[in-house]
Length: 254
Image (cartoon, rainbow, N blue to C red):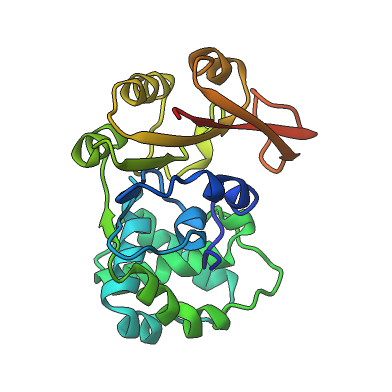
């Protein structure tokens, strides 16, 4: 199953490498920095296995919760008129926290994601997109999210809450040097947070899969873990990485 949205740093290109690394003997799977949920939607749903999906972006988490709990109302609310004026209006309403119901806010946020360049929610994409199809597909995602626990918490708090020897955490934090591309209303990831994540993962009882960019900070701080090196075309250039080949790593503690 594919994700229903694009996202900054989405793992559509890495999910086929990450999913086979998930151990078979875990009884809880926790996606710590959920984003578009490519790994959650792509992995097999196993009977009796707890699944947790988390992100600090409150607008994104509200969207997931409305799909799970109020899917029919969300379908009715979505207006698929594709225009720059509507895009600007919805962006203004979201950014300025105009009084909206949770369903209205979810519909507007989904519109911004689907109608923006690179799913950045900031720049209107003039290319005509097939927006209507997602309305019909939302019930499929409601069914997939039916038993998923949806959280909005800091990664350290979340990991502490769900940690146990049989847990598997998948973490996809903002990449070093690319933090500015995320929703500043909720995400203020700093170098101290990168260090805090490293310290947190060193103390857990469970296992983790961590996806990151291949840069000096990451290779130095995770050199004593199992590191797999991968690369792809760079779609999000930053100070830390070149514009050509984008080098990434998949890190595990097992």
